[in-house]
Image (cartoon, one colour):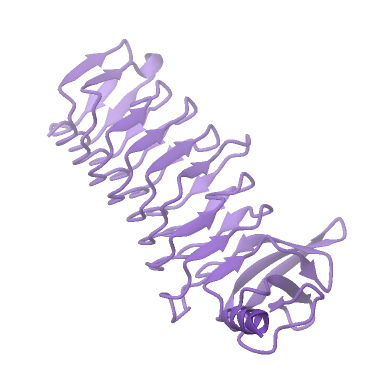
Length: 289
């Protein structure tokens, strides 16, 4: 009797399920059991907004349609019905989920290449995303993870493919570190602005530009390695505004290429010494104030 009660409780919570049933006619992806039978009560349902057959496999773009009972989503589990993989989360993927307080954890598909704008924006209880992010990612939309409670360490751009990151993509999330590989050649406007728990960032030698306010008000950020890659040729205004960097010496080499540093870039940043190389450096009147 105890076992039956436990299983019944888990079923109500949505934890006995987690596979997916793809219906190409209805254009839906519905939570199902391991036999491919759709759940009758409170399943998660996603609309398939786009599907493209590649080598006999449907590549799906999905968007929230109906919220399920579970507080955790696993988009890595098998898809039944027809051969399919999830490659894209549409713009506003979960934006119209009125029960934002419910979802706390999600496993992203390892086949994912694109995350649309505001996909998870303002899901303030979303703490865990696994992986954060898949190696297959090539595009992240504006404000995709804006104001979430995600604490995972961010890792992108390490598989050799270029990654495009939209403005404010991770602004105000709670990740403690970010490891940006060679696929990330530009940091977008407000990319990490207001990430109050972010303490360390790794940049690559392929980075060419750092956008306006990219790290503004990252008040726990003490370590960026390298602080300024030699490949960088443009730094937007207030990029490191109010960032308490430990490395007090900034080396600007520019590798014989022009580099532009706009207003208030390093204001209240902990930088006390600057070493210039042979390249042409253009400063505004308030680049360091």
